[in-house]
Image (tube, rainbow, N blue to C red):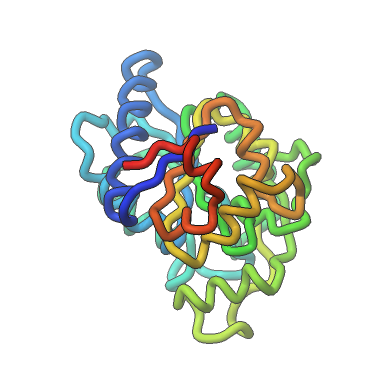
Length: 253
């Protein structure tokens, strides 16, 4: 795992997008297509904006899955991850093949169907974030590091739900769904490459816990340290609590 630290989230997002674009172009050139996993949330704004502007990507050859979705939320809701991906990625690029987690539909059937599509062919690159509680997708602590299911249903913890209010997706905690569909940790780790985009001071404690503490279900994103081709993109604010030793090993831009 590599850690790269940038001055701010705009330069972080641009750098992560440049690396992702190279991987996408290479996959399309070598295999004729690319399969990606896309993350959502406020932390991904600058990255996705930069990625959708990158030249030389034939988006018609890109197939997209997403990490997670609330159960019971329609696609029209401002917090819907399907709405987010339509507006910030799919409609901007013209991606034709994408697999939505319809959390307001027959959830068990959707988990089976999309999970089957997901594991049919390896994923070239996964874009992920890290939650304020250290979650990876909606794998809140203590995360299930053992399940081989590609997607499964989880109960969201209060810290995770409060983050959604803090990011202004919901007016108050009572509006935040209590359950969600999430991609499993083991499935995320099957991607050939992982790009983790983690800006902002509010993520600093999670960054420290996940990358300096034990690899543990209590710090779910710590599992990224076991993946041979993961790059974590931080800004100086999310990296602020890292030790001098960790910062010395990181690339600083």
